[in-house]
Length: 127
Image 1 (cartoon, rainbow, N blue to C red):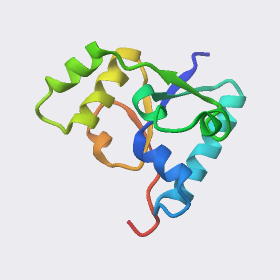
Image 2: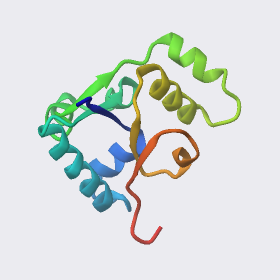
Image 3: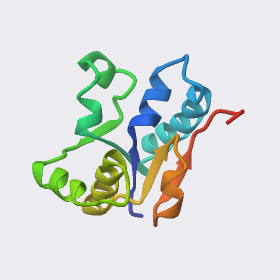
Image 4: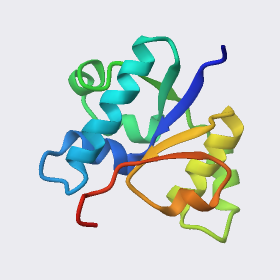
């Protein structure tokens, strides 16, 4: 069986770590299920280096311990900046999904639903 790679995007991680975020509870539920599938050897969890670098080592080695770093290079950034049709962070995420062969994304945004990627959506109940 091939592992499913799941990218945790910036909004998802922000909601996961911030109890005041409207999508916090939903993100906890999605993350809990992902961690279970990670522990069962079914999923590989990743996040962009540009996102993880914002958090101290204690958070990365604690709450985000199962999440591997996917390194963003200058080349990735250059390709992303050449995409005009979407905002820059979305473009970079799309580039990384494609370049790294990642087939799923955990997110709080509906933006990814129009692309060929499995979307694990964590939104606030009243959104």
